[in-house]
Image (tube, rainbow, N blue to C red):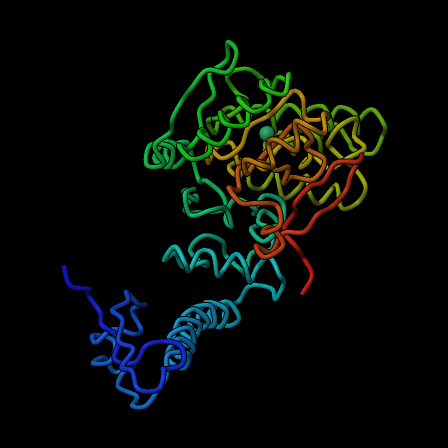
Length: 338
Ligand SMILES: [Zn+2]
């Protein structure tokens, strides 16, 4: 069978007095089809020049796409931080308008993004929620159905996640087992998927405990505590974060922010099927194996909580995330720096 391409001029020095026309299969840039193309039509260009031209064209196309995403991010109304730029670029790559996900004029929604926004820069295999805060249970159910939740058993507890996140978690469990380690779920059936009602229950528990404590400490009146307890969830979240800004914390033992223990109602990553809570979070080797399979701690001081980002650790800074150390563990948080 004749070769597809026949070089008119062979590579290497031509011997005097010989034609030196050995048929050799060459790169596409050597082909007649390439020569007939616009790029190859640049007459008189040697092979190295054509390779350089092809590589240059590819780089130009890639950089144009990146530039377009950056320019769109720059033109947005989001703060000019590393994370918000990456957030805008990531959503635009998915064909989603970033402002439809989070209102850049709402301090509350920007705060939500700062606390739990890592999921929006996850690998394309992840489906991201349509809003940074779910409005109601129907919106959560609709998203979880569309994201095609998959389930498996870990020990005796079911784990329910998005397909790619579940595959990665099972791979991590298998690797841990080979190393003689166990990865188990904290919270049984609620370690992974949660309903809005589940997350509200956790939030309410911390709010009630904090209110009882601050009334007892004389920092809040009973009437004020009762008013706060009965506020609608969005208004209550704003009021609680307002009190925390004055030093009245609602998290663990009223010493930390409530956000390290409970998500603002409607914002938990568990609703998006991209998070799970692990018992063995303190074991460095377990964390290393989980990270190898794309699972990272992304909510500061919520130690058992891991988020599936689906990326190697060295790629995380390029996603607008930066490492923050707490109790010798690394949290990958949205980077607030410009
Ligand atoms: Zn969690």
